[in-house]
Length: 240
Image (cartoon, rainbow, N blue to C red; front, side, top):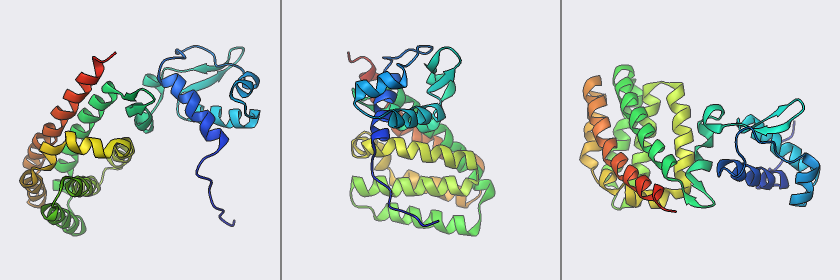
């Protein structure tokens, strides 16, 4: 097979994004049927093939399902979808979504702390070298943006060192959720990112193979940013 250039976007992508947005913002309730493919095609001014492809993708994401006699029915994404939905939830057409921000804050703390614990028990020479390099990179960072990237690299290295596939996949989803608002979150997470010494303490605990200390120190460090993220989330939740 000869690989071909991939289009950056397509009609099906646009249809998928629109319908997904309608579902995630609650304009379609769980159990409600979507309009028929023909009607959607007419409403959106596209061909039925694009609508069909978009609906198939929505089904794969756990947002809709085809039911005999009812057509395509909206599912409750809270019960059916996976972590890959986080980026769409975090930033929507109405802006940043408070509950999703809080969820990310809590998830990153849980995964990061336990990954640090596992890393201390499963450390390999290659993982140790990478962690040391990441700690040095963070120490050299001279501004907030550079420290943010260095911290991301460091936590990726911790996840890799934990040798836990589920944590690696969850980290991928968190990273995709993080990217659209990365610059904004740098300001929110500044107290955590500026604490270079605590990042180095976490790395040293892992290098010392002290699992309890790695967990405790990582949890404490990530809680700093988590508290800031949660405060933002609560502020956003009370907005009309």
